[in-house]
Image 1 (cartoon, helix red, strand yellow):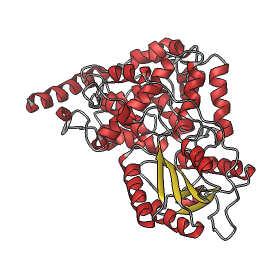
Image 2: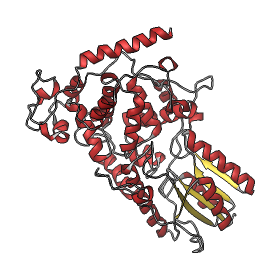
Image 3: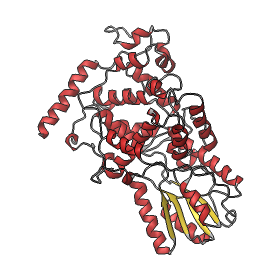
Image 4: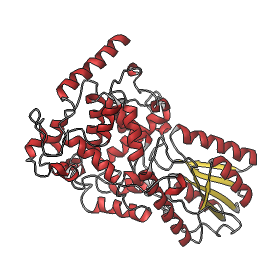
Length: 463
């Protein structure tokens, strides 16, 4: 049995149902847990204060949980390959264990670390952990990746599911005091200030409590009927916990399947993995439209239009409510993500990449695969996307999913005294819905026609 190995924590900040950590603990006398902090400062295209605040809490929780096992979290900062090589030399570790990532940047680093391990003559063990099925294991009959969700999901649902792994109870002796560690990070590490949003409680225990609440309180059973209702808890509220690996996907799946094996919620877990697979096979989606026919499509929206959208001041109550929920909580109900994304791309004609980046910088649960997939779906350019001519009317969406105006009035208090029916139709010209609330910045029907013309012209030019 090897004496010492490293476990590199990434997006798996838990002790229960953690594949790489489980195998590391079984394989070695001592597991040295390490987390490598990123060294960017002040701003980043994929994250912001909300998510970094949540990360700090997650690392604090993980460190405490490791201490209960008689271990300690070693924190380093910089490039993962450089820091892990240093730690291998310091600890004389004979292997590095980690759970795989599915975006091109994580995969590139994994290849670099494998090369480091080869050069050092030690073992390198990567595991699939954040998905039920790795992208390359869910393929068509001709061994090709799926481009459409429905056949993918049928395959995914029919595959045998791995059981959850038990909680790790021992990692062997604590790393020697001579092995130095940085302090646990605060937002100051990235030169960020405290977020204004009220962030959900972080850490594995809080995430497991949320999972238990979702399943035990009947929210799972009501998910299919209620999931499009934005007021109240009608969804799992577990997306940020899956993003950081505070709960294991096998554990969550098993608990849900024990109640409703083919439930709508489980199909949403398949959607999540469909988007992972799209990113795995088509990493160019970060920069380009998934559908080649739409590449080069003009987006004539202005920065001023984008700022109205980003600040929740469009004059469309349901859009503003969704954006203000995001700004104040770091989360947004999925139906509102579709409504706000389609409004930005189809009514304001702003490039979907602008909205994609804004969401990633605000969302606590920002998952680059799902976020990209959702934005391209709304823009009509992605995998299994809404056809370009299917454009949601925000007034009708509002009436359908928030008929009493409960969600709108919670997040747009200027409208708390406005009768609900008036929230779901354009106000009369020049007459705002309430004092201090702006008039709608555009006419939906006019902009819908303009959008159709832009798409149709581009399609004609490509044919």
